[in-house]
Image 1 (cartoon, helix red, strand yellow):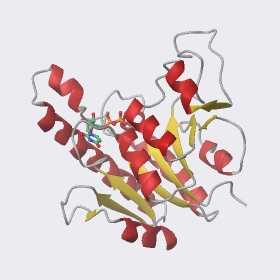
Image 2 (cartoon, protein in one colour; image 1 turned 90 degrees about the horizontal axis):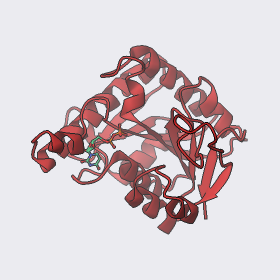
Image 3 (cartoon, protein in one colour; image 1 turned 60 degrees about the horizontal axis):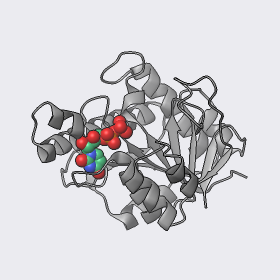
Image 4 (cartoon, helix red, strand yellow; image 1 turned 90 degrees about the vertical axis):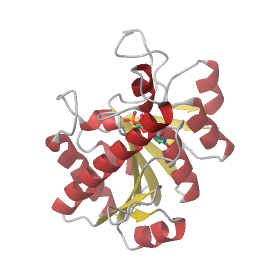
Length: 236
Ligand code: UDP
């Protein structure tokens, strides 16, 4: 039996760029699609939120003189580009997927409606929720917390390029120690930058567990679903 029946998988836009430094690495994309299909094949319902940092981030645009709201809208459009790319990669693996948008833009994707998303999940389709929350000043981490809670997922799985949450940044500090389990409060108290505070608070207030793991290692997503302790669980 899989550990979770329904998950919300958060993928960062940045990890989609692979080693290229910008845009979409098709090898990385199909590696993700293979991993996602493998868990749908086990009966897990999968909703996905993808970031847009490989293309555009509103905040960094604002520092370069862009209007913040326009920049955030550009960032949200970047998440749509990534979502379409992932839907296409899933289709190439024989996995049905649909892109929903928090902002109306048919026929690119259908407007996100909770009931429709759940019907699609029940049919074994992967639902990719694009545009984050649909509002500026938020991030796709907050968008994924929101969708995980709304879609009544058992957990939000945050696929990253590190294998969990550490006492310090493991890419900078060799002494950093990994947590198997950590509470939301410890994340605040230790000032760990796992997700932005809005996203963490939403998960805390609604009792949504977060599982942080390394999605860039093929097979890891399935291991998480099979109950192997390869990442960090954030809970109360
Ligand atoms: N964004 C937004 N509202 C949201 C989600 C995202 O305005 O609800 C914009 C914001 O500008 C953000 C960009 O979209 O910088 C890309 O999302 P994010 O930075 O979360 O992507 P990631 O870091 O996961 O690649």
